[in-house]
Image 1: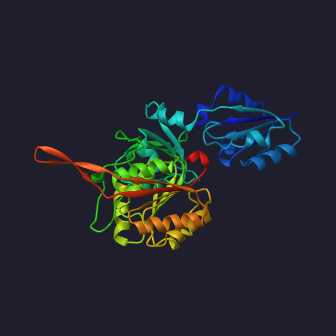
Image 2: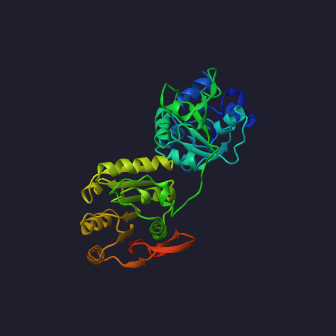
Length: 399
C-alpha cells in the first residue's frame, strides 16, 4: 500500500521538526504549493505544485512511487491545506505530521501567551472580525490579502484604537514584526503572508438584552423600541450566535443593536426607509462597536427581496404592509422565527389576519410596564403605553 505523509512545514526551515525532516527524507515524490516545493524540493525526485485534495489524490493515484509527502505550511490542523486530505486519501497508509503553526511562532515572537485568544482567518473568507475583536482580549488573524479591508472594518466599527501586532512573512529572510493600531491597517501595502494580533484590553464579551434607553442616540420623530419591550423581543427571537437576522422598520436601531450583540457570529440586516433614521442606526452601531450590521435604506417589502435568507425577523414598523412583509419572510424561509410588535388595535388585527393567511401559529403577549419616577421625596410608578408582542414561526423547540 502506498504511504502518504501530510507534513506541517512549520514557520520556516528552522522550525521544521525532526519527525517532519525524517518523513521528508523518505518521500519519493513531493506535492504542495510552489513556494514550499522551491524551498524543500530537489532535482532527485519529482515534485507537483498542487494543494487541492482532488489534485493531490490524482497524482498519488496515478503515480508508481510508494512514498509521497504532501507539504502544507504551518501546522496540519490550523486553517491548513491539509483540510479534506484525510477523506481524499483514506485508502492509503496516511499519516499527519504536525508542524509549528503560525500561531505558535508569532505568539513566541511577541512574547505573549495565547490560551485565551480567539483565532480567525480572513484568507479567502468573509468573517465578522470586528465583533470577534470586540468580544476578545486577544484575536489572532490570518489576514491573507485583506489587511486593508480588515482595517476599514475595524474603523467602521469604532475599533480604530485597538493595539495591533503585525507579522509579515514569518520564517522568511524578510520577516518583519511591529506594533501599530487598527486604523493604520486601512492604508499601505502588506504581503499576502501577513498575520495580525489585536490586543483589546477593554473587550466586552457580554450578550445583553434590555439595554438602557439612554445608551442610544435619538432623533425627534424616529421611534425606538423601549428597553423592557426589547428584552421580551430578544427572548422570543431565541437568537443563535450564527443567525441571519432582519430588523424591519428599524427606526432608531435599538433592536438591531441587540440582535447584533446576540447573533455575534451572524449578521443583521437593518431595514429603514427614512434616510435620517438610517444614519442614526449607523451611529448607534458604531457606539456599540458592532461590525455585523448592514443598513438597508429602503421600504419593506420591496427592500427584502434581495436579502439573504433570515433565521430570525423582527417587524417593528410595517408601513401598513404587514401582510406582504410576512409573505416575503416565509417565502425566503418558511421556518423563520418572527416577532412583531403592535401598539394600536388596527395593527394587532392586521397582524393576526396576516399570520392566519400564512397559516402560522402564534402566541401573543400584552406588555404593560411602569417605570419609577421620583416626585419630591417619593417614587411613583409611571405607566408606559401597552405593547402587544406577537411571536410566530420557527421550529417547535424554538418556543
